[in-house]
Image (tube, rainbow, N blue to C red; front, side, top):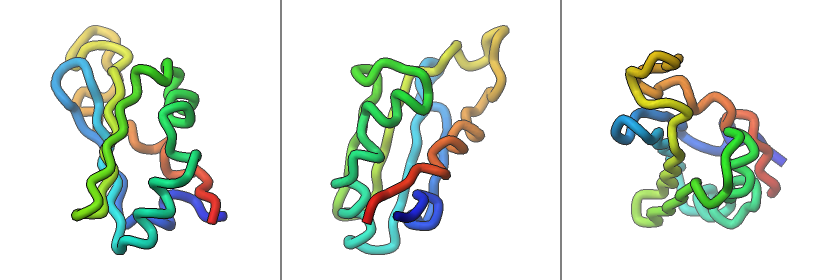
Length: 103
């Protein structure tokens, strides 16, 4: 078993409009990309547990030609709102780092 931060080449997050955050996870090769896309560790249910969401609110897209996984989740509050903790959404990837990927 390996953590996602050791399997992925990069993991980053950012705003996807005022109401969503998107995560980009890139891989150096097809083998690593395929191992993670097949893993239940990066399922909508797993992401929902990490971010305290309903799994139906998690969108996951795998783009094989570029070895990239994109995940989009709703923001807890609107970007720039009074309860905002991370205006640009760039610090929200941290919970993904410790995900255990079987393999």
